[in-house]
Length: 374
Image (cartoon, rainbow, N blue to C red; front, side):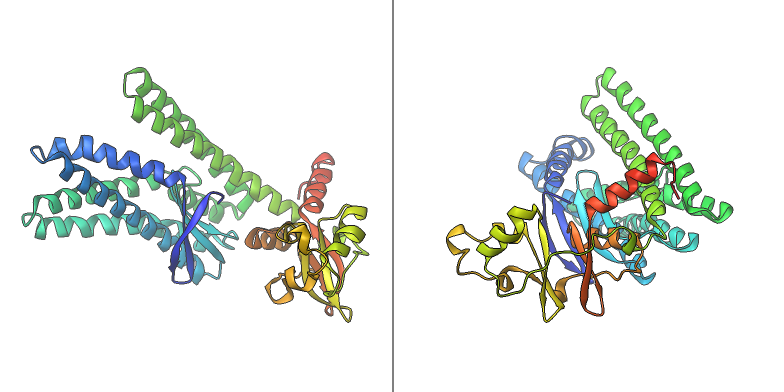
């Protein structure tokens, strides 16, 4: 997700925090320090309210992270690649690169999220019963974590795709209809319906004077509606591409360069005259890397004559090369995983083509214009 920074790595999964998370952190801390804690525990110094508010907010997002880790660990166990977990304005998201292959896996992956929130809520309630009387500030934090985690579990169990409950609902429809596309279409429609309902409730709150709560519900409803629709569109794209071999969409007779070509030659002989942004790098007819316009931009023009392509290229071992018979869906997923716009197509170590996002978009447009969605 753009605008994110790396927090760390847990079980091989990268943890990122989007800058929008800071907005929610401030809002949650403020609502706790100025509202919830003074109302439930009057008489504290203002500084104490803010300190406990900060601690409770951090523990809230630790709970959200544990929720997403539960999703990711189950997905990993099912063999689905996980790039990272990102905390952002609406909570957290596990970036799972592929859809599950059967409804049973989908059900397990989805249900474990709310189950983890219930477990955290029950665990903090037990701590509250045992240690709540030791310290009133500890009691306040544990009370809040119990309430908020059980509320998160209840909210995520709403059958509104792509919430966890919506994915559980989709898995059931998928199992009944034996069609992931049909199940996603139904679950997406239900998700959009819940999204519009939440927006309507948010507008009612706005008109009755609850400005902050109303705005927050409108934003959540909008996000839910958008996410439900985009999830269905993404599946339609994947189903359209499924079964189409890469060789049917790749560019052939792709120009290549050798590693000893200077950046100046690369720009003057290839990039500018041919208006291309990426070239495979070969040595003895074998692919050894890729060089892109972005790589060139990291080199100052004063160094173009003394810097060769081999120093700035992405080496072969860091590339995801495709085979001509690979599925177009694999190309799209690989581009998403590596965050690149093009991938080389290789046969017996030799470059036979290049696939770009532009090729995929043009293929989708042609098939959509012909009404040939698969």
